[in-house]
Length: 165
Image (tube, rainbow, N blue to C red):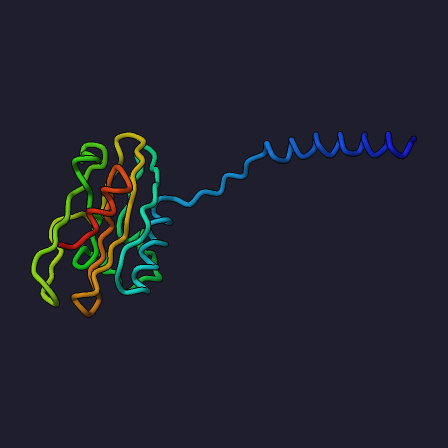
Protein backbone atom coordinates (compact mmCIF):
# COMPACT_ATOMS: atom_id res chain seq x y z
CA UNK A 1 0.00 0.00 0.00
CA UNK A 2 2.84 2.41 0.85
CA UNK A 3 4.49 1.58 -2.47
CA UNK A 4 1.34 2.55 -4.40
CA UNK A 5 1.09 5.86 -2.53
CA UNK A 6 4.80 6.54 -3.17
CA UNK A 7 4.34 5.91 -6.89
CA UNK A 8 1.31 8.22 -7.05
CA UNK A 9 3.20 10.99 -5.21
CA UNK A 10 6.23 10.54 -7.48
CA UNK A 11 4.02 10.80 -10.60
CA UNK A 12 2.35 13.92 -9.24
CA UNK A 13 5.73 15.56 -8.59
CA UNK A 14 6.93 14.51 -12.06
CA UNK A 15 3.79 16.00 -13.62
CA UNK A 16 4.38 19.34 -11.85
CA UNK A 17 8.05 19.39 -12.91
CA UNK A 18 7.16 18.59 -16.55
CA UNK A 19 4.69 21.48 -16.53
CA UNK A 20 7.43 23.83 -15.33
CA UNK A 21 9.93 22.54 -17.88
CA UNK A 22 7.41 22.87 -20.73
CA UNK A 23 6.54 26.44 -19.74
CA UNK A 24 10.17 27.54 -20.10
CA UNK A 25 10.69 28.54 -23.72
CA UNK A 26 14.12 28.70 -25.17
CA UNK A 27 13.99 31.34 -27.84
CA UNK A 28 16.64 30.47 -30.41
CA UNK A 29 15.61 32.29 -33.57
CA UNK A 30 17.58 32.92 -36.67
CA UNK A 31 17.62 36.48 -37.90
CA UNK A 32 16.09 37.36 -41.27
CA UNK A 33 19.61 37.72 -42.67
CA UNK A 34 20.60 34.25 -41.43
CA UNK A 35 17.52 32.66 -42.97
CA UNK A 36 18.03 34.44 -46.31
CA UNK A 37 21.72 33.45 -46.21
CA UNK A 38 20.80 29.78 -45.76
CA UNK A 39 18.38 29.93 -48.70
CA UNK A 40 20.94 31.72 -50.86
CA UNK A 41 23.67 29.24 -49.95
CA UNK A 42 21.50 26.30 -51.05
CA UNK A 43 20.56 27.89 -54.38
CA UNK A 44 24.17 28.92 -55.08
CA UNK A 45 25.34 25.34 -54.45
CA UNK A 46 22.55 23.96 -56.67
CA UNK A 47 23.30 26.57 -59.35
CA UNK A 48 19.64 27.18 -60.21
CA UNK A 49 16.07 26.97 -58.99
CA UNK A 50 14.29 28.68 -56.17
CA UNK A 51 13.84 28.14 -52.47
CA UNK A 52 10.66 27.47 -50.55
CA UNK A 53 8.84 30.66 -49.48
CA UNK A 54 9.89 31.46 -45.92
CA UNK A 55 8.33 34.00 -43.58
CA UNK A 56 10.65 36.27 -41.61
CA UNK A 57 10.15 39.33 -39.45
CA UNK A 58 12.33 42.31 -38.77
CA UNK A 59 11.97 44.92 -36.06
CA UNK A 60 11.63 48.64 -36.49
CA UNK A 61 15.00 50.34 -37.18
CA UNK A 62 16.50 47.08 -38.56
CA UNK A 63 18.41 47.06 -41.81
CA UNK A 64 20.04 44.38 -43.90
CA UNK A 65 22.23 44.22 -46.95
CA UNK A 66 23.84 41.74 -49.33
CA UNK A 67 27.22 41.84 -47.60
CA UNK A 68 25.74 40.73 -44.30
CA UNK A 69 23.56 38.12 -46.04
CA UNK A 70 26.40 36.65 -48.12
CA UNK A 71 28.80 36.68 -45.13
CA UNK A 72 32.20 35.26 -46.03
CA UNK A 73 31.22 31.86 -47.34
CA UNK A 74 29.53 32.80 -50.63
CA UNK A 75 32.23 34.19 -52.96
CA UNK A 76 29.93 33.45 -55.93
CA UNK A 77 27.62 36.22 -54.79
CA UNK A 78 28.53 39.69 -56.00
CA UNK A 79 27.54 41.93 -53.10
CA UNK A 80 27.93 45.11 -55.17
CA UNK A 81 24.65 44.28 -56.88
CA UNK A 82 25.81 43.22 -60.32
CA UNK A 83 24.55 39.64 -60.21
CA UNK A 84 22.63 39.55 -56.90
CA UNK A 85 19.89 41.89 -55.70
CA UNK A 86 17.19 42.21 -53.09
CA UNK A 87 13.98 42.44 -55.15
CA UNK A 88 10.76 43.72 -53.59
CA UNK A 89 7.12 43.44 -54.53
CA UNK A 90 6.44 47.11 -53.80
CA UNK A 91 2.67 46.69 -54.11
CA UNK A 92 2.74 44.52 -50.98
CA UNK A 93 5.67 46.03 -49.05
CA UNK A 94 5.81 49.79 -49.61
CA UNK A 95 9.24 51.37 -49.85
CA UNK A 96 8.15 53.70 -47.04
CA UNK A 97 8.32 50.71 -44.63
CA UNK A 98 11.73 49.51 -45.89
CA UNK A 99 13.60 52.52 -47.32
CA UNK A 100 15.81 51.53 -50.21
CA UNK A 101 13.48 48.74 -51.34
CA UNK A 102 13.17 48.50 -55.12
CA UNK A 103 11.68 46.11 -57.64
CA UNK A 104 13.86 44.03 -60.01
CA UNK A 105 13.51 42.95 -63.58
CA UNK A 106 15.50 40.72 -65.89
CA UNK A 107 16.28 41.71 -69.44
CA UNK A 108 18.04 39.92 -72.25
CA UNK A 109 18.30 36.19 -72.72
CA UNK A 110 20.80 33.41 -72.24
CA UNK A 111 24.32 34.56 -71.40
CA UNK A 112 23.37 38.21 -71.98
CA UNK A 113 20.65 38.24 -69.30
CA UNK A 114 20.97 41.28 -67.02
CA UNK A 115 19.42 42.05 -63.64
CA UNK A 116 17.98 45.58 -63.48
CA UNK A 117 16.74 47.57 -60.48
CA UNK A 118 16.63 46.06 -57.02
CA UNK A 119 18.59 46.96 -53.93
CA UNK A 120 21.82 45.95 -52.24
CA UNK A 121 20.74 47.40 -48.90
CA UNK A 122 17.41 48.27 -47.24
CA UNK A 123 16.37 49.97 -44.06
CA UNK A 124 16.16 51.06 -41.45
CA UNK A 125 12.59 49.72 -41.26
CA UNK A 126 10.09 52.37 -40.19
CA UNK A 127 7.99 49.73 -38.38
CA UNK A 128 8.04 46.05 -37.47
CA UNK A 129 7.39 44.12 -40.68
CA UNK A 130 6.92 40.48 -41.69
CA UNK A 131 7.44 39.27 -45.22
CA UNK A 132 8.12 36.17 -47.28
CA UNK A 133 11.27 35.66 -49.27
CA UNK A 134 12.26 33.26 -52.03
CA UNK A 135 15.82 32.98 -53.35
CA UNK A 136 15.89 32.55 -57.14
CA UNK A 137 18.88 31.28 -59.09
CA UNK A 138 19.17 31.63 -62.85
CA UNK A 139 21.52 29.08 -64.37
CA UNK A 140 20.92 30.16 -67.96
CA UNK A 141 23.60 32.82 -67.96
CA UNK A 142 26.63 30.73 -67.09
CA UNK A 143 29.53 32.05 -65.06
CA UNK A 144 28.56 33.32 -61.65
CA UNK A 145 24.80 33.22 -62.20
CA UNK A 146 22.13 35.72 -61.28
CA UNK A 147 20.55 35.47 -57.83
CA UNK A 148 17.46 37.35 -56.74
CA UNK A 149 16.04 37.48 -53.26
CA UNK A 150 12.35 38.08 -53.98
CA UNK A 151 10.52 39.70 -51.06
CA UNK A 152 6.74 39.98 -50.91
CA UNK A 153 3.87 40.19 -48.47
CA UNK A 154 2.71 36.61 -49.07
CA UNK A 155 4.26 33.30 -50.07
CA UNK A 156 2.44 33.02 -53.39
CA UNK A 157 3.62 36.42 -54.62
CA UNK A 158 7.21 35.77 -53.56
CA UNK A 159 7.18 32.51 -55.55
CA UNK A 160 5.47 34.02 -58.59
CA UNK A 161 7.90 36.94 -58.65
CA UNK A 162 10.70 34.38 -58.90
CA UNK A 163 9.44 32.92 -62.19
CA UNK A 164 11.41 34.00 -65.25
CA UNK A 165 9.18 34.74 -68.21
